[in-house]
Length: 145
Image 1 (cartoon, one colour):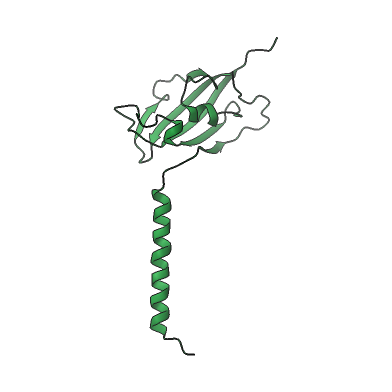
Image 2: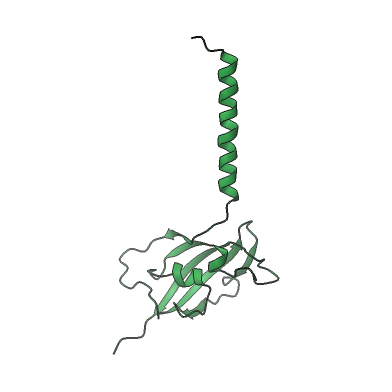
């Protein structure tokens, strides 16, 4: 059986187009679950963040297209809140557990763990995936009795 070289080239080209199209479709899919990436680890970490801790965080928040909508850095003051108490978006309450002081993470937060269908106008549109670079400055833990 002889195979025509031009048929092989045509089949290969079609396969490449289909494969590339599949990659584009993957990129278009919305982020469906929280993604946590550690940007800077801390050696000899003895205290990791947990629910109920008062955290002091520096952060930069961006939309998927790179547009920054908020940052604590220009203010020179970290944001303080109690982890797991609903004071921040769900993506933070889930994505900041187990951090060490000085650690940096990148959080990619799907809309349902951020501001959802309502968004946070005017800077955060409805159904927006959020990308945060966060740095845990300090953990304050209430001692158990």
